[in-house]
Length: 106
Image (cartoon, rainbow, N blue to C red):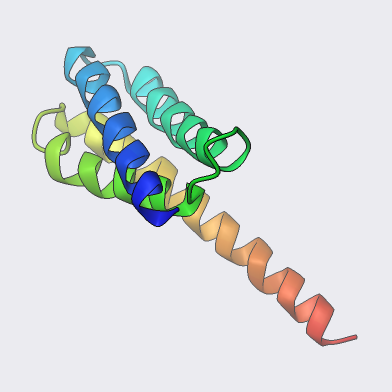
């Protein structure tokens, strides 16, 4: 299950990296491609007949993109991507801790 998620993550990371290299100074498109790639890899692994590890796919895809694409995109796009993904991580952690606090406080 995990190995399949790793393979799907590498495959989606490769495809997204090809798309990202062709984008010239379009921050919005760069952000949308990374978000769609993450959701598609997770959905493909978790909710189709594959039944692979969706979290592993997303993590491996993120590591692949951080290693390969970060050096080959415009600095402005890199800053926009970093801002959006940092905000998403902060929002997700905030919701998670609020839910845990509500559930544990009952």
